[in-house]
Length: 347
Ligand SMILES: [Zn+2]
Image (tube, rainbow, N blue to C red; front, side, top):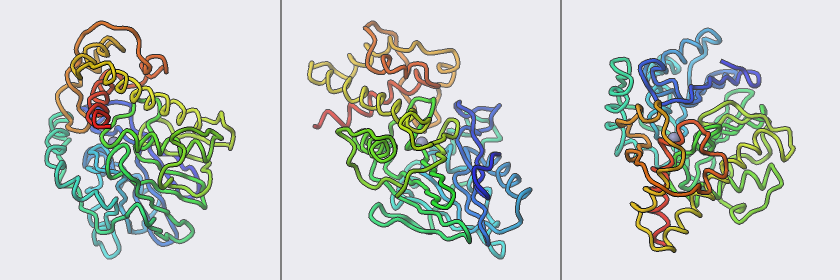
């Protein structure tokens, strides 16, 4: 684990799908140790990963865990949080905190998520039902959690990566925890609303990187001031020194290019009268699936794409952006096209 600021600890998960080797340690997870208690932020894809996080916490503090925060519904972020049962004050369960829409999303999906993780990870992937939120955050009203010296500002967002994205801003430490609103060195997986995700990405760039764009004005941003450290949902932690070429701005720019390219590709296909099947066949030629990517087929139920198909066609905007080199590109790009299609065909 890495300490970004006093008491602010993060563990970077592998850039991979959950499997028997990584046990579901595939997302960025961590905790904030305050003066009187602890907040855990995401717990990994299995009870095993959550227990390892709990053990890492206990080597650093004996303080109780007051809050376990879920950045969104996906199994690689929430299933490990059950490992913190009984770690609260007086051995009670810490309060689960999430977006106002998190409970409904878990109600629809958590059974499928648990089955899928056990299938992908094996017996060690078994997890109980993820805890349901005891405190929720609405996009109109950020929630402040005081932990002694650290105050966590929890911001719920309009639909973007999912319909229940929550970011965590620690002003005293200058750390912004984005959850999967930012994917770094990995293809973004769209499971919410493309235009909302473009708006969030544009708003961060406008605030921190001096980039104005059509999507710059968009909803709650999640941090009132520029962060110094950014914990993405996946990929290495990022630095921001205030310059427009900082790693944070570079990662935001790459995500913006990918999301804008996705929108452009789908709109062009719709304008040309193509069917979704035509588009998927054409885009299937982009980024030939690697052995790893194709072997991962079989269903985490998280962001599961259709089976990659072969096809013919020239490079698209995503390839031009360099996104084809991102981890898990072949696995998720086609699924993103389908999700974007379902949204944009009604424009
Ligand atoms: Zn996610």
